[in-house]
Picture 1: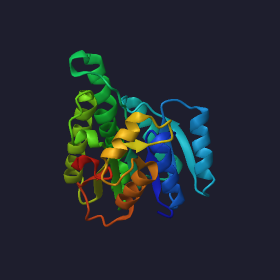
Picture 2: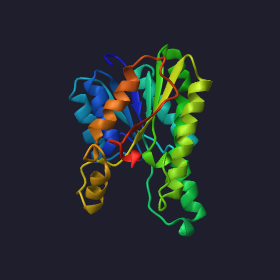
Picture 3: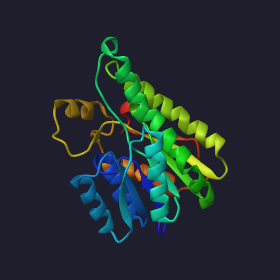
Picture 4: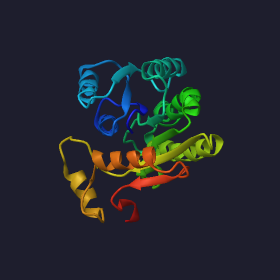
Length: 241
């Protein structure tokens, strides 16, 4: 990744932060997006810069086309182009199907499906010009298996999986597009009984880590460009149960 230029949406915290650090550790210059500039975003940028690469945070609401256009343009100007887009920004919410409001449904799709579309569309000119442009979308195991109390989330991620394949077909051969679907990932919060329950059901005997997701993103970012349109579950086999 030495000298590569990466844009990671939602890169200030949790999985996004881990992806930004992993890409920087591999030599890439990184711009992260954040809903609002905060101490957390500034700390992530400082940590990425500590890996001796260029880094910056830009404010972006991925559901707003104008905000996306400004953020992507700012990232490309800072980096001198974009080689890799990681669509990580996402929303998650638990709600029973019968209680879901239209507003909840639309808000979930605005972030999880509309957002990656808007960012990818805005970044397309730079990715196409890069000669080896790549997009990695962060989907979810929930987009592959129905979770009764997460209907809007699961459906939005399933749509993102299909969007990834559509992008791969539409933008070949100049841009490769793949999707990583994490399972239960522990990102540093307190581990409760629910985490323990998922770990017990996972064939590999544990929940996933941010590093596990980062490994998959780095694979798609550096593997043969002949690999495109693929969906990779990073779930320790949880989806098999």
